[in-house]
Image 1 (tube, rainbow, N blue to C red):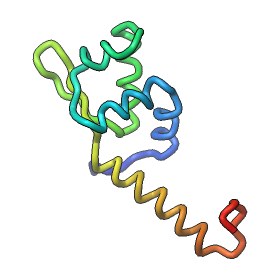
Image 2 (spheres, rainbow, N blue to C red):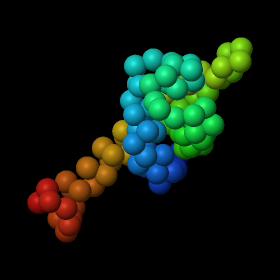
Image 3 (cartoon, rainbow, N blue to C red):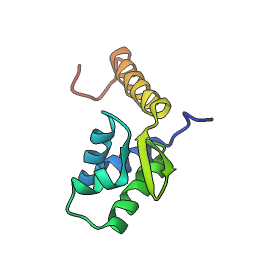
Image 4 (spheres, rainbow, N blue to C red):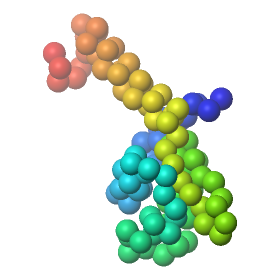
Length: 103
């Protein structure tokens, strides 16, 4: 199923500043690895490492385009993550013994 994800892996993937910035870039459009690489002072193997973490978390799709890889947001997973945070917020609002600051 396409929208299955592990929230812990998603959060770990986004906890790294470089991966978070890459994810934000991809929110606007599909990008070639070469375009992403141009935005960072990192090597191609380092970029590959970051992209593998994002891909393995389910946050992004990758596809081969000639010699380059193209990356895009996995919107099914992204939408599921947004719903999960909304669900958590609703639980907190509906629970009288919530320990968060919303009380």
